[in-house]
Image (cartoon, rainbow, N blue to C red; front, side):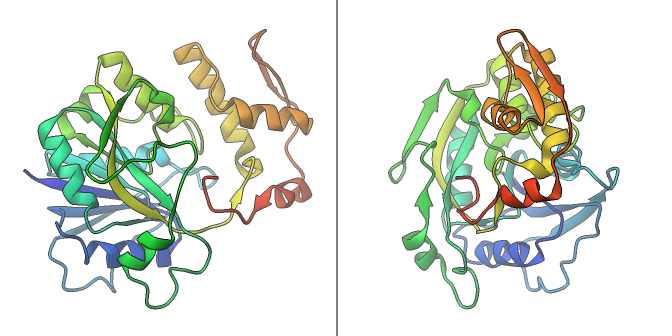
Amino acid sequence: MSLSLLTIVRGRQTHLANQFRGLCQSTMSPTEWIIVGMDQDVDVSEFRQTKFPIVTARVDGDGKRLPLAEARNQAAELSRGDTLIFLDVDCIPSAHMIERFAEVTQTHARLWMGSPRYLPEGVTKGNWDLVELDRIAVQHPLQPCLQENEQLVSSRYELFWSLCFAIRKDDFERLGKFDEQYRGYGGEDTDFAFSARRVGLPFAFVDAVAFHQYHAVYKPPMNHLVDVVSNARRFRQKWGVWPMESWLSAFANEGLVRFDPINDQLELLRKPTSDQIEQSLTRTPAGF
């Protein structure tokens, strides 16, 4: 069995270095680590003496929107493994994450979402270790709390998040990869999960733990409003339901959009001011 670990990145070099540090403490190494930079070259000059080859590539967008779908597809295209593990640059793999993904993907063909746990600010600075991170990290309230060696098949495809998941490469291609019609932030991961449901690929959670590093987030994501609105329309046209309804409703409450899901209406009224964007910035752990 061969395992390709795939990471996409823009900025966040310190997060990438911490991910590498976690990989070096893993009980199982990937066959390769593929890192795709979005609108940037990838700097791996500090990552020496690895047990696995590192492959880097670059995908350029329009300079404004993150080419998320394109970058993930490029990473998969470059991969040689028969199993793909996607891990966002914000995430540090636990010691057994790769091993757990290897076990379940070898046994069952499913869309396997890992178990992200969230870290408070400052804990990944200095001399941290995985035991310490495991003690400090907290479970996300929307995700199932899995015990050791537990897995859970679910029909809740809308709970899939692309920050930490594994899939067999032939299944990734059968799903049609990530839909590159989604531009920038929002919707492309739920679309991917719905594609899995459409082709009959079961969705499941597994206790493949990754530690999500702290960074401040915009809640709702005012800084990505235009992308969210555009991608929500794309999703509604494709799947017949509205995604990201809590965000769209929050934008509507601020007078930025007109959102009427009952009458199937979504209209961008104006862009947020710089003050509105700044006020949406929160110091809570990312994802909450």
